[in-house]
Length: 118
Image (cartoon, rainbow, N blue to C red; front, side, top):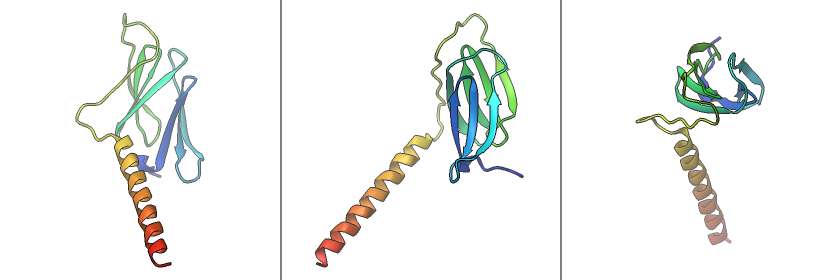
């Protein structure tokens, strides 16, 4: 069965990445970092690349299955919390904000229309 990564929420903590079904909250898959332990930084690039960084190790996971595609130990770079970014990619946060703004505007318009009809 193929999982649509658009139906998942990705959570990273304690050296784990967990994919949750966004409608039910059920665990779709769980991945544990084979190297290092600690804080997890995540970035969903597209439907084939979920980048996870755990204390100096950076991994590419398949967001549909949680399978590890590759990793890079970034030897000599140190450890700690990692900041990661993708260039020229659509930020899913922007879609969420736009959706929330549209929902609020629709609710406000519906409330104004209801008040006008009173």
